[in-house]
Image 1 (spheres, helix red, strand yellow):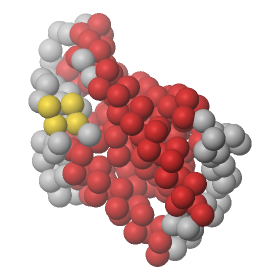
Image 2 (cartoon, helix red, strand yellow):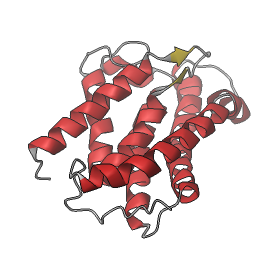
Image 3 (cartoon, rainbow, N blue to C red):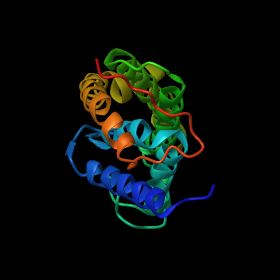
Length: 197
């Protein structure tokens, strides 16, 4: 992937924003509620599939090498945290949001919301099984999959729906503006053609 300076700046910006989102948190046991998914969704909407995914990958790699950008710190041992599956999910979720957005020729707020929620659900599809696996295999806790769904999905999905609505409304308005000013790189992507009507 050939990256321009603008692309690198955008990737770094959203990696940093996701890191900031890790510290805007409401503590829950095992899976804290943070604003990380808010910036993950924005990365997919504004940067597209490849750069959005790359921004989240950079964030995760920086944390794994030891920079304390995750909610509970950083380092390679973080893969044993119950919430690490969601970090993997952010990488995939940003790509899904970006890719689906690129394929829509006439965007609406409603479509953008559904696209974002699809990406968020992908995050959960990775995060919840990972939570269950860590609890069973690493922590050696005899929990049921229903417990993992309740703790890792039910308690936080409401907040993610609200965040997705906000991202959809803001993204719907600012993507055309940023595109016209050539502030969003679309090289290698289908152009996001969002119609403000």
